[in-house]
Amino acid sequence: MRHSPSPSFSLDGQVALVTAAGKGIGKACALALAQAGADIILGLRDLAGSDALVNELRQATGRDIFPVQMDVAKRAEIESAVAAGLAHFQRIDILVNNAGIGAPNPAEHVTEQDFDETLNVNLKGTFFTSQAVGKIMMTQGGGRIINISSQAGFVALPTESVYCMTKAAVSHLTKCLALEWAPYHINVNAVAPTFIATPGTRKWLDDAAFLETVKARIPLGRVGEPIDVAGPVVFLASPAAAMITGETLMVDGGWTIQ
Image 1 (cartoon, rainbow, N blue to C red):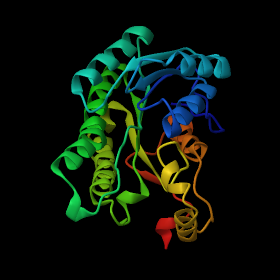
Image 2: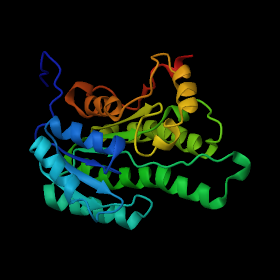
Image 3: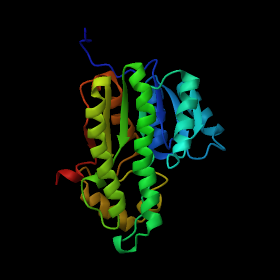
Image 4: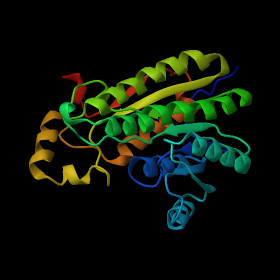
């Protein structure tokens, strides 16, 4: 096979499914992938009221943006959303498993409901979405899966035991799927961000004392923005990353190198 003498970051002609794409990191990834040339399946936990978001992304990128109802904690919704996206575009080349939850709670106060809800989204959702899309990629002859892990999968964070556990599992699942699906030319990687300023983290990062404590742990001296995660996702989805699989790329400003 002949290779281009320069790396390509173009996603022209490809289709990407992004879960939890309504805001924050998911929205940023959807926008960045579309700007790189991909059409987008927007996985949304609540499809109602998505018209404004869809119109915003279409106008900003000129790409086909197709929203689907997709609560990844419900396997039936995963299956129906993937089927709808496939019916609309006839292919899925890229999957970004962005959906994740994890409200802080000291380990001694974690309830069974807390535990089950976090695992249902972060692990069950990631696994079965990967399975549903992976089957399609196998028949197509390849694809790219990018999981959103976290620095919390590599360092311990107080009051985040269940979240940390699930994100560590996401990074290890990334290795397992990468090895198992390599013969099908499916690259599976993960991105592991530090604290990112999103609607979901605002209530903590708006606390000046908490923000300063976090920034003091990050050698680059700031928390991340959604675009800081979207850029690496586009790279891992692109032809430029063709020989990368099974890796978790830290996007943590240096937190975990200490």
